[in-house]
Amino acid sequence: MQKTITFGIPCYNSAEYMDHCISSILQGTGYAQDVQIVVVDDGSTKDNTFEKGQQWEQEYPTIVKAVHQENGGHGMAVLKALENAEGTYFKVVDSDDWLDAEALTLLLAKLRHFIEFETRVDLVISNYVYEHVEDAKQTIIDYHGVLPRGKIFTWSKIGHFNMTQNLLMHSLCYRTDVLRDGGVPMPAHTFYVDNIYAYVPLPRCKTIYYLDVDLYRYFIGREDQSVNEAVMISRIDQQLRVTRIMMKAYHLYEDVEEPKLRSYMMDYFTLMMAVSSIFSKMSEEPDAMPNLEQLWEDLKQFDQRMYRRARMGVMGLATNLPGEWGKKTTIGIYHVAQKLVKFN
Image 1: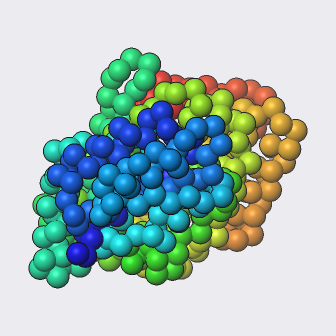
Image 2 (image 1 turned 45 degrees about the vertical axis):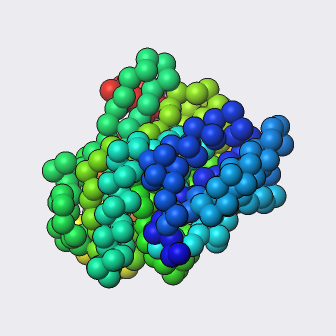
């Protein structure tokens, strides 16, 4: 049977919580035979992650596939799942997150409809929900007023995304061939590669559908999470590495023809440069600021227009104020935004 969708689940020492993730997909899809779940053990060292994956495969051999690889990081695990994917569509679900059953039922029905009627849709977008650990509250990220609902559209029909509405990995379900045709340049042993995944393939997506359901449940607030502030500061080198890859992926004003998509991608990239600036200023590593300055210089040399837009706009100016006072102001602005949006 041709698989409608493959869910790739990157796992690293995930035995404590991966069962919830896997069972949410199985239950939400009604254990359907046109669904594939690829559980990738990324060289776990502290628990029986791979053995758990194998147990799921033994119980549901026509649905679940357990794969082991030497540790390569989140991006390599996503690519391993993509390599093993048999579905027409592909979605990543991190092992500590889960999918809402009702919303997943609707997604699967819509994908089956596209396939049955040979309607090519390159990207299906849905909402995601921050599930906050510290206060058990939820923050729903939707695309109301930005994306047309209930119809297939192109990038020319999108509205303006605000800062909380970026298309993150949680909201994306690509056609598998879109990801494979051209690849996704995710480096090994690097966090934050989900930004590459949610950025580089977009110009290849010619047709889009927005399914207005709260599908992806993103668990946020654990101290060891990659988006925890202290963790992000300690991994500023990886943030800069990802941002540089995104920079070199496109000369946006030359390579992306659709103005609205170009504008969205430029805003996303500007945000990445701002994040790089903020956490470089918060870092106590002696090379953090020189590395940031080199990133800005590399951008200036790579594309003058992208540099001016990222550096001279409001966000670029606010996150790169000069001197010690400017540094404190930049960090203060970030902390205000953090409390308002609760993104980490």
